[in-house]
Image 1 (cartoon, helix red, strand yellow):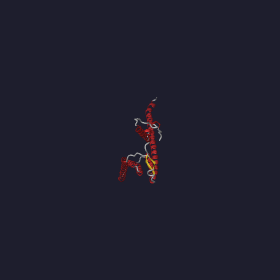
Image 2 (tube, one colour):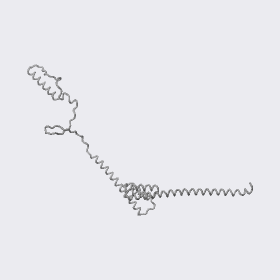
Image 3 (cartoon, one colour):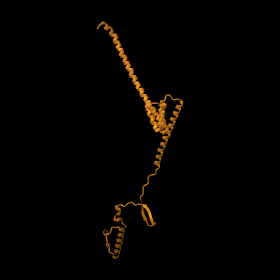
Image 4 (cartoon, helix red, strand yellow):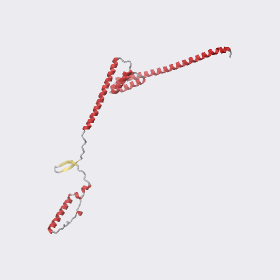
Length: 235
């Protein structure tokens, strides 16, 4: 390398390194700016969608379609987290009778909204108190209903045994009457020793034997023509 070349080498290398550093800085700035532009575009699109959801929710709210309005405000809040949307969702729950959820969203609005004038704060606090009072009344009514049902269960008389009734021919009163059905007799109750004619027959035999002994004076029992073994056991 000639002396001229040596004298030009150091300044030339420095200029190349400076150019490369500048190019890298430009690329970084352009890339970061592109990300911010994309984020801004995405944010703008989300706001457009949220605005459309809120517009439809307001129409539903004015028409009394509080379930649909609540869904619209919820979609808008998922896109853009504006505290005022919490207030709107609280109003929907309030109109639907959901005191607990209404209180939840009103408290969230009061917590997240940093720019609230005293008059609006007073309104929100009144709505929270109103929701709390409604919730207390609902809980008291539920407890009273539970206690009333338990007391009624304690006062209920025990169930009485059911008696089966059957029609009978009541000749004494010349009409049909009702009487409790007698329990069915067991097979053992139908033995010959439980029949009236059995004991009547034995009584007659005893009388006949006694008469024979009295007439003849002999100490023996004259058996009758029939015996227990030959008696007809049918009714």
